[in-house]
Amino acid sequence: MDSAPDIATTVDAWLRQFAAHSAVSSAPTFKKHAGPPQVFLGPLGGEHRAAEFSGGAFIEIGAPVDPSITVTALAALAAEALARDRTLWIVTADDAWLPDISNALDLRLRPLCLVLPGADYAGGIALRATLALLKSRLTRAAEDSEGPAWAAMRARLRTDDGLWRSSLAWSARGLDREAPPAAIGSLFPVRIGPWALAERLAAPADWVMLIQSAQLPDQVRAPWPGASCTLMLAAGPVSGLGGLSGFGGLVVMDEAMRLSAEIEVLGQELAEMELELATAQGELARFTERYHALVAGRMAELDRIQADLAQARMQRSPDDPVLDRAARQAGTRAEQSRRERTAYASGEPSTEQAFKPSNDLKKRFRQLAQKIHPDRADNEADRAWRTQLMSEANRAYRAGDVGGLDEVFALWLEGQAGAHQPLSGAVLPAPTFAAAEALAAEAAKIRQRLAAISALLDQIYGSKLYELFAAARVAERQGRDLLQEMAQRLDSQIALANRELDGLGA
Image (tube, rainbow, N blue to C red):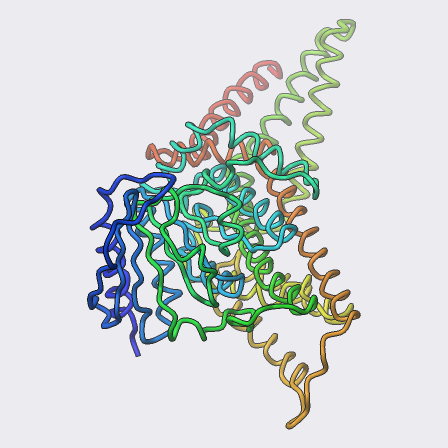
């Protein structure tokens, strides 16, 4: 059944409430007007309670009847906030909903949204991953970082350049005990996280949405400081909706259960970063193929001719040390070009101009990476199998092969069938210290992989070839083909060098 109309109706109702109070001045403290709160029926059929405050409005609004609508509607609300250049807090009771909301966010807009779990160490990992994702997307400057929301983000970072630089420096140091810059939350227009973390970050927002995925404390059920309007979804169908973690609104007390919930959140960050790395590698790989097909071969040919020229000049004046040195240097350069060309010549160049994966392909890869990633393995055999699957998933993604990704997913499902299913009537064992220890080790592996991906992205973006790729992308937006232009210039240089060599031979 198509739920799109219900999602649109839900978001429209929320937006009308925000718009109705957008003219109200925001202030850091609020005083309630005298008199009872206003009660009325809203467009979703649920009761709304609205209490006007001197600095903003607090409105309790009914949750959608279908719980599955809420997460998608929240992601759509985030997109609307970015489109309207509004800042937004989505405040939850706990971490249970975060993976679902993160998965639902528009892939193009995901780096503009800070999704943070409540636990300190997990929050630090997720924050560093989001900073790395944002930095990567800004550096790539591809189609997935274009549009008004990204233009506004670039303007925001130029205004807060000092904070942006200090945040990146904090992330690069990677010190567990070092707190991030105090105002780091204000870099992101959309922030999503549990109420305790939201209070600590103390980043004001134009709009605030309180989600009762579990019972929110009384002090949170009030206008958010600095917000023009605070909406709170009333307890109801939404409270029983479980996230990917499977814990719904339960209070997570056991250490193993807490780690499992956090790993689900961090696993989403890992999938986002694996997608970003695979995209950057795919873009550069496709560009490298064209570079070698159009430019590298011509450069090797030009180096060879110039080495022959230097040798011919030296033979005319064998006692000239300058010409002798030039001939040796040209010969070395020509041999290096020949070896590089030979090493790459094994593959056929792609006929496509550039690697531009569709949103559907990206979503499939992200969802698959979240499930099959080797760092989610139970043991070494499982890790080896997952590594093989992940390698094949990367190959299929870079080839634009949707069917290949589906085949990897089918293999994963086949391997999972029955592997973790309890016997009928069996009671699941209680979490143990050993289970918590294994989960802590899994979280550590995720952390290491996130740091490794950040380092790999920095290595890619710091390479000379990527500098050329970035220049080619700028030229493409101007209607030019930089590699074709380079190839034409090399053809002219080769022709001139050949004529000069023929002249010396005569």
